[in-house]
Image (cartoon, rainbow, N blue to C red):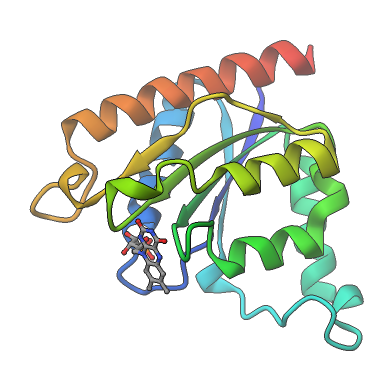
Length: 176
Ligand SMILES: Cc1cc2nc3c(=O)[nH]c(=O)nc-3n(C[C@H](O)[C@H](O)[C@H](O)COP(=O)(O)O)c2cc1C
């Protein structure tokens, strides 16, 4: 069976590093046999969740439908203030129910090695709020994990290939 994976890039930085992780995931997931839906929050100027009428805007409904339609999700985000960025949280607030029981993997780009546990709060919210199955390993990359062109280096790419394979394997197993 073929599984569909939503690749969600949440950084709003035009020169985003985590976006290169998301792009690399896109190719690795396709190589592993998944159909990928690419969703880059830089292409969507979303309001903050809770602003009047924002919940029912057509664009928000369409994004919710895309989350609903996939079997699994890869979230790529920068680490901001020891968490994923606010755009990632805002996206979950808008689309949350559609995440129910999806398989999720994470890739984060950080400024230093001390925030390695920073994604755990986000992971907890997905598990406890939406019963997501979150892979118990994620891709955590600091500047040394990118090559001179700003792309994932060899060891980062190997890690992305591993986690991509695992995301497809677990998603297939749970969708059968
Ligand atoms: C507001 C802000 C907060 C940050 N907080 C952290 C942090 O808590 N821990 C960390 O390791 N890096 C932190 N960083 C560094 C970013 O995680 C790092 O530059 C990352 O590669 C950015 O990813 P992006 O290029 O995809 O946006 C922070 C950066 C900014 C701008």
